[in-house]
Image (cartoon, rainbow, N blue to C red):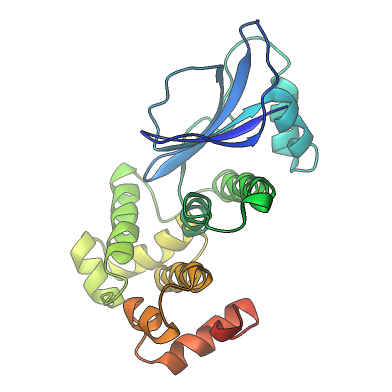
Length: 250
């Protein structure tokens, strides 16, 4: 059994200890870069190039996969055969929920006694999000994203929104910035990330707000305005609608 989280140029975070073995073993690496991710079977101790990696022993992964979708169960079964294997033939795009899950892992500041349990839950959530992304991209044929240029423009739109979330442009302005028409931007964004652009942005804002509230380093008002909300009331209403509680109850 074993699960560890590895960040580039940073100390690893052990979730479950790996069993010691003198043999050359294989492990699974769920890796994430700025815009993409995948799950690959590799030789243990392979040098990592990605920004963020969750590494599983085969036994740990098989235990989690047994409760997943058919595609994940089938992938776990393939691991028994020789050779290299990847969950998806092509790397899948990152979405807002994945970015926020990784943020919660890398910024954990809770009790040390429950840290491993918390990290385990977040690792399982990353696998769930990977499955959802895989389903979106394999069960429906792309209609609006027809080539690599369209895909690159949608990813640029996502990145632009995330770096300007305190004062985001409107849809017409965003379309002009990324160089595609509004219809393709709106529909292509939903096709890639499962949400229209500003629903996606709203979810990212609220997840970031919840994380900031949990750290208790700033007031609710400071957090609301830093995230670009026009008023504390607007932030509070949106927060309660998404999480079922007011910001002050976090």
